[in-house]
Image 1 (cartoon, rainbow, N blue to C red):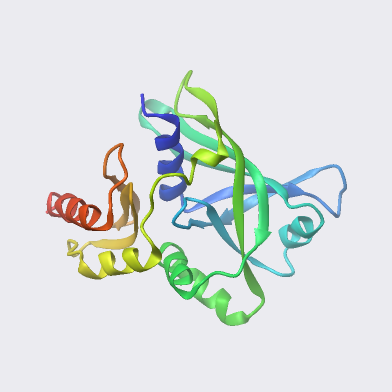
Image 2 (tube, rainbow, N blue to C red):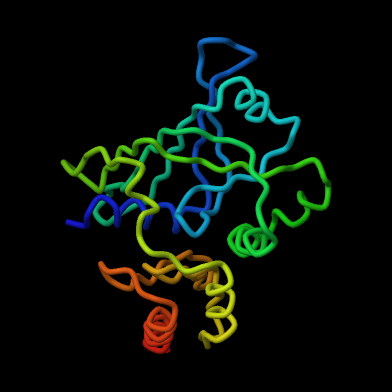
Length: 213
């Protein structure tokens, strides 16, 4: 059985979108949920790019409390899923983090050019994680980003140095794993239970990529 935190991080890095639920302004008292693309920052916090005119933007301005559902099919018809509950607020992010977001969500480039979209980040208070049948538990949100992490500069240098197979696109790397796109499938190559420093992460990532040949 995979640990709760490992299951959550795996879901956040492998799922290209999730269902974000906010408090509806148009229909007070009701939740408003819709599918929304996202990527994570170096602390595994979800980042969204949302139009200023979107329902979610109006809802979050009135009440930033929200939840995010992510899910991924497992073997034998089971589904791993997690519901994150927390606060979603607009943020200004540095260029390297914009680059990271666009590696995971390249179609968002055209939205950035419109000038009507801004980034929002979710800070999780609690997460309900279901790793399969009879594997459900709550996880404190403070545990998500506590692992030592690579800086965005470390990540960019690592991605520039790594040699990937021709059919693999490098998306991002942190101290716990490397995210790739193999064909049409987003995958995460985990480094193990212990976070790695930048040099060790690069060596481990290259070894995992070499094993794919």
